[in-house]
Length: 330
Image (cartoon, rainbow, N blue to C red; front, side, top):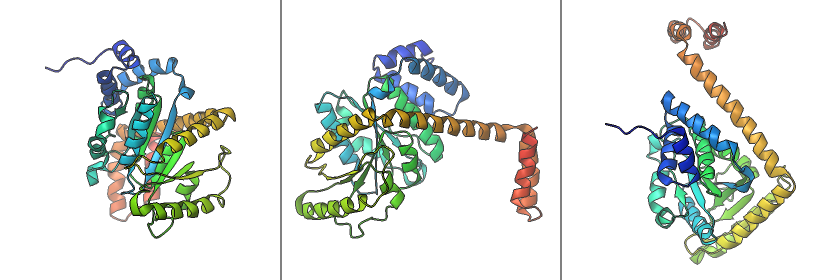
């Protein structure tokens, strides 16, 4: 027999007391597709948000091409934060795990030191969902870990693509991890991703690759001067580090603190959070409407009828869509 779920009050008190078991259960509720779980999660979130101090935390997105060493880098950064007395939490946006097997579950086992640190928290992302759904759940999980007292939230993405845009829309700082000596200086990364970056960090600057890493830094430094000014007024920093040898991590964190101070002072951080809240409000409304649409009995009946016409080539998809949407509008 399954044990009953904790009450809203038990969840709220437990999370505020940094109870990891209740925090994990609350994130599971957020990720659940069951309506009763979602209703409970909404009540918990609503109470936690009443006393939230959002600008007291820092949200960092970390991305980079596969093989760039994201998990090793995040562990090195996380352990540095633990050493400073901070409480880092690592979350992920990974919509691909159902197809590829995903990397973040492996990342959790690879981040052995950070996983074992009492001051840190690592949570794999849900598997096999749409990008938008996973991103929304990651954002809600972020609110929960902040309520539990974790002051630095690191959002990891699986690669370079649409998940980076979602990550930028829920974080304060965007960090792009790069490889030294990869040949093509942009390493297949779209210019838009580079433009999003507040920090470009050349990783694996150790051994014979130190020279290549410094050369890559020079190329990227020149490239950043050609990019348009950022709304934050922050000039992107290009740095090198070795996650393996733990070099450059302390310097990077000092620069990140400078970013936080500057964007807090000029008001960008607060305004950016406001714009992000507006985006996620609109995104959630769209997701809710889509769910309602496909559950509507008349829509389901008409869609089945018109789909056959479209597949047979007797009606255009556009016309069929207009007819189905017209039913939902009444």
